[in-house]
Length: 91
Image (cartoon, rainbow, N blue to C red):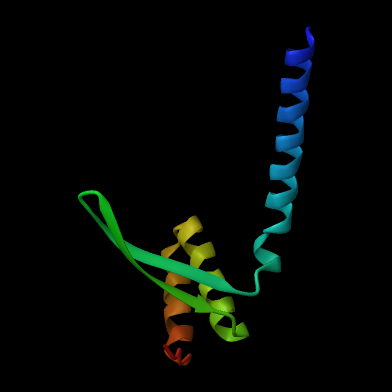
């Protein structure tokens, strides 16, 4: 291998390590704030709204909702729906 190939390999290893460290740092157990972006796309432009939540109750509800979306479990959705009836979220 020549010097440029060695440099490319070093660069890719460094990037891999950086991305792995970032993925470990952003595990769901460490999440304490949520930023949500909702938007619409039209020809050549995007319109969007952002919401930011940092209170403990709202963040825990959103984390649980995201986890349930990933699992796609309807029984647990009903349990979450029952919990949401008692939570008041202010915008």
